[in-house]
Amino acid sequence: MGRITKDMLQEVLANGGQWAVKEGYGKKEDYEKTEDSGNLKGDPHAVSERAFKRGMPQLGSLGAGNHFLEVQEIQEIFDPKIAKIFGVDEKGNVTIMIHCGSRGLGHQVASDYVKEMEGKYGFENLPDRELINAPINSDLGQKYLGAMNAAANYAFANKQMITHWVRESINKVLGNADLNVVYDICHNIAKMEKHTVGSLDDPDAKGEIKKLCVHRKGATRSFGPGREELPDCYKTSGQPVLIPGSMGTASYVLVGTKKAEQVSFASTAHGAGRVMSRHEALRQFHGEKVKKDLLEKNIMVKSASMRGIAEESPGVYKDIDEVVRVSNALGIGNLVVKVKPLGVIKG
Image (cartoon, rainbow, N blue to C red; front, side):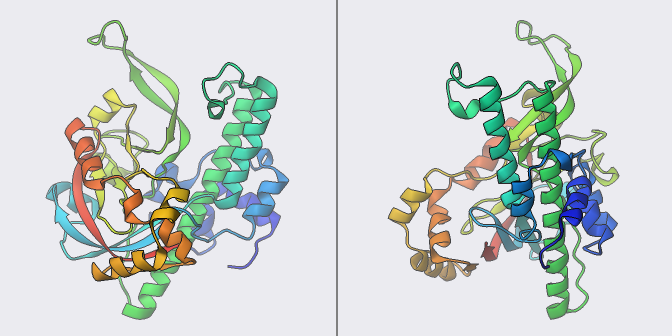
């Protein structure tokens, strides 16, 4: 889509994925299978003018870095019952995984509030400057929460538009294909949630239910069965947990568990995670060679630049098989389906 107006962006920041569906980008069932129904309580007025300017031309775009759109094939099914509930229960079927976010708008929101927090609270007594924060119930803490939620709404709308265009593209080539959203899930956000908190002195203490601000930076929510936040279709199973690998390795669908709620505030990993900086990746890998190696594995990759391919080479990421093995062994996210990449688009 073309550049949107500030008034339109105000609506996006307030209504998220539901705005996108209202504007014709997809269907109601899409945002019903999204965290918080694709609409957090955001405050567009807490978002700076500079963030607005960065966000207006980027809505509906994939983004660079580790963002991607991947065409995949279902390779292995570990839990047929849960796989059927999720709609990914047939080996050989094709799935599409989209990883995008709030683009420059979200980055600017973070930058703006880091600066404000540094000015108000300072970081002299922190072990790391990047741990800067504001008390959640302070004016600044609440203002940032509203701005962060608004940025998340931008991300929900952004992904929803891309989902719609994927459907259009596939239908244009294959005819009336049936594409349904499994789940749209966050991995860089703070959420107000209720959790049972026990005593550190007494592991067997029953604990009490408290409302907490749970930060998931590089983590994915992993609610088990029965959580009121889940859509009706997943209340008996637990929520889908999407764990991407790299563009040369498998990705996985897991299911949230009650164990995760007990031991990790309902969180598990969000993906393979980097083991190498982008600078080191450029020193060790070359885009053309990575692209050729992937093609030999029958994986096609398209990117805006060869530099981007080098920075995202499979060699810069952890072993995704080991990441999900640990999650499954700990019971904080159980294996459901393994998918392998067929084609990858990098922003």
